[in-house]
Length: 89
Image (tube, rainbow, N blue to C red; front, top):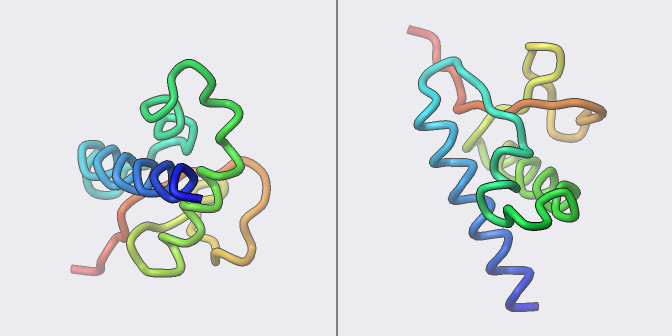
């Protein structure tokens, strides 16, 4: 249980770091976070990475994009990208 919680925390931190580094309005692929946290077997952790991203989107920390447009966390399917929320100026 602790290992899974640690992994989720590492993924969350990496998603936040990567989206911040990418800059406003720019997105990352969830696999970038998985690769950074577990480079040797990142593909095994893609489902967990997506779960973490959905939780983060529900909390308002990130947006999930599908075909370049934000989607609700409960509508996530297929290929997605992640970015920091874009606020209207």
